[in-house]
Image (cartoon, rainbow, N blue to C red; front, side, top):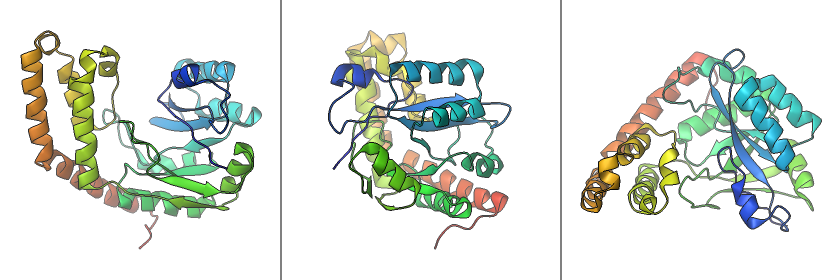
Length: 274
């Protein structure tokens, strides 16, 4: 049996459109929580099989109480499957705090192998999972609609049974890692979304990707001048396409992430797999 879920950031509007009870469609969401006391930085957590009321209550814990332990306690009491997404990812405007990640990983049954992270960082996540006896799932984490490129295999006649087998480590992942080519493709898709489709749907300009170079483009595209001048908008879009296709922004991002992965490995003393 196959299961699919759409884990948009902090919204479950997809299920209001698609319906909450379609066969093999599992309600899910990627929730953001910033706990300055315990975690010290923002975490992204995938939660599955929740309903409207549970989502509302979790949002209150995350956005008002900022209580990570309370959030996870709620998930466990309600027996909701959950995953620690991209453990070594940090908001670019926050202080990077990799030394806190091991204690946070202990709170989760499953960690994420993320297609939009470098191999070096994903290997650190695997090493972290092995260190604490956690399981791994592979996710696409696309922000441009290209779903299903990676996936997680496990037995289960229901999603609960499927996820329990994942928690027990009785699963296989079919992963990919971030490459220069993949990042250029993702950036170009975002440029299209920001400058073309956003002329019809301005809500996209209120969304940030977490990748600094892309978020800079999002902020520039909010300019009133670009919004009311189609010719200038088109010129700006072509300029960003040209810059993206040089590969320079992608190469710079990958270089910085490789350097960061080396710092993480030294700081928390876990060895990546060879």
